[in-house]
Image (cartoon, rainbow, N blue to C red; front, top):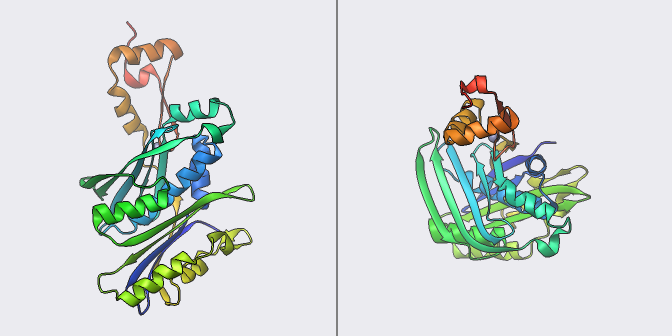
Length: 288
Ligand SMILES: [Zn+2]
């Protein structure tokens, strides 16, 4: 069973609902980074947050959500498209320091929320929107809900659920958004329903998460209609050519030093952790 994102609306009520299961994708991404459980959980939340917010893009393109902190990690970020493609990153050196700091993470894992940055790009990669707001909550879901209200004036509720179930990472989320013509009665019924909602772990069926049933529950007494459904997949658009370009930005003495030390240069993509290796012949460089 693969990861999914469902886009729904109330059949007779004015709200939008997006529900995502990115569990396997988050597992794949966090494994590539070698992330410990606390970081995997946080990355799972940010991955779902980016997918849910990207589903609201008005045109094809991509959206990046970056959460900035003080403490064990300076930031966690994820890029997603409305079609369910996603990648995510944390700083590799900070992660290594965290893993090395004791293999006894909880007491050492400390994050003070600082800022949320959101960037939107068009399909051709041109910048459409960039905003930053202080992160008003230490939990990712309420922090992103705050961002949507403050920066985009969207009254919504974004819920994120990431953790470990029988030793396996799960990453689920929903975004429920009031449409402009919603009436007070519907709004308060939806709010009330969200307060009494059961944990998504209730929707585990065998080896998969029944997010269709979860979506129905999120709609409360209102019937929902699923309009689009996409598979969620880890995707990074990095290429050897782009990695080489990045390498060529390094000052020449630094490049030469790499070759002197190792005889080859390795560029690791900060998102998918793919390793690109270049020889001197590839670059036509000479060691002085
Ligand atoms: Zn990559």
